[in-house]
Image (tube, rainbow, N blue to C red; front, side, top):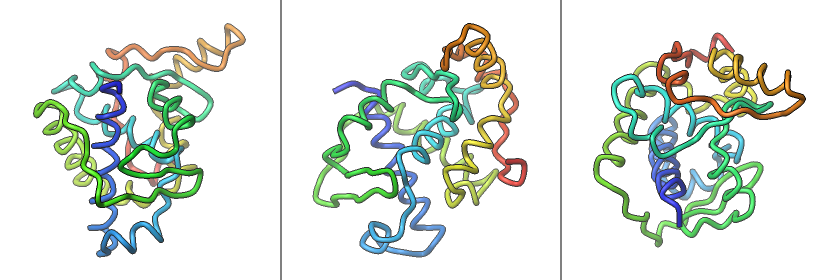
Length: 182
């Protein structure tokens, strides 16, 4: 399986922990109450990958984001998730996610794991409400990023609906994550 998917699984696991901490709930309650739709997770994947990219590019180095109608999308992950809703560790739908606590996460390089946790920690510190924002709010927030605006405009000028976002544009962008700006 691609490293992109393994990293995504770790991102989703850490996002689950953040959500549980925010609401003060356990795994079973999380599985019943969460709003981790595919769209929400794809948006959060972008924010996790981008937030600390000016200091550490290891997450961006493993992903390729495209400017698409609903904001930046890592298309390898998105295609995999759309075609394989059972990701062994969890099942994902258009509305929620359900974790299987009996399954182990795949092994990834320690540097990747540290950066996933560090990036989520930064997001928690800068915008603790990000984890409870709905998918539409996260889409709106991602539309504030200049790297998306520029590259989606390029796509539309070519009568397309997607255009690759160069890593350097994500790295150098203003990291807008305040949900009040969505």
